Every structure is written in structure tokens, then in C-alpha cells.
Image (cartoon, rainbow, N blue to C red; front, top):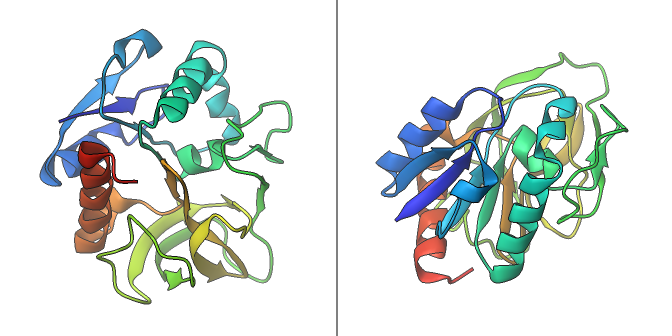
Length: 203
């Protein structure tokens, strides 16, 4: 099963592709929107400043919006998850996809930023598709300075100074602020659930 990994000039694609392959799918790095074709799923990775997502405006945005409308599962990782929201105050001139409501904001409090290292997923009351095989209070790997708000789409939260949405789901749109490719068995379990959802269209 083909999973397209969107290559918009932001790093960490090789480790994401390796994890997706280990989880049982055929990853393909895609640098042009027209090459997504009939992919069963789309992954939008990313690390760094929100301004980097400016590369996703135009044709990429249209392609991802069309895929979401057709029911193709989409997974945003870290910066890719933030792009699924309306935007970020890190760069007010660059809009997000708007598939999820809310504005990403900087982590605040008497804390070390960026938030880098292992932290806990606190499961919410909502049933989750991609966290189904992940235990309560599982630790996963983070590296970020901005985060998404806790909304009805959050299926897990994490606290670092303040509580933020660490895993989100809305229909066939998924996002993880953490890095499944760096989170050991828990990360692979989430990617397998995403792949199963994509294969069976059971989101």
C-alpha cells in the first residue's frame, strides 16, 4: 500500500519513511502535488518554523484538501500537525490548512523550550483510532516550541508548562505533535493503526 510522504523541503523524511515501511506500508517521498496520484494515505512531516509550511500553499493545499474530501487519511507529524490547524502565531502571514480549528501558540511557563525529549500522552475520554494500541500514559518523543490548543479534536494531551493537544483526530484527518518515528513501539503502533485505517478506509 502506497503512503505518500510530502517533501516540502523540511527534514526528517528518511526516518519517517523507514518507520512507515517497518509498520507495513510502502512509503514514497513526493516532491510534487501531482505525484500523489492514487495514494492510499498522505503523511505531512516537518520540524522547524511555521513559515516553512508556506511551501504548502497553492497546489499542495488544493491537493491535500481534495484528498481529505475524498476520504483519504492524512497524518500530520509535529510541524505537519500544526499546519492542519488554522495557523500559528509563529508566522501570522502563513495560513494553515484549516482542517482543524485553532491557532498554535508558543509553549509558556517556567520551562525549557524547545520541549525536547520524552513525555506522557494523557488519554482523553474520546475513543481514538490511531491510539487504540497505545496504553494510558505512554511516553513518546517530542521536539517543539509551539503547540496546538486542546479542542474537541484532541484524543490525547501532554503537559509541558501548559497542557496542549498532543494527538488529534477528526474523521480521516490525524495529527501527532510528537514523533512516532522516534517513539519506539508506541510510534510504530500508531503508524500501523493509521495504515490499517488507510487500507480499510475504516477511519
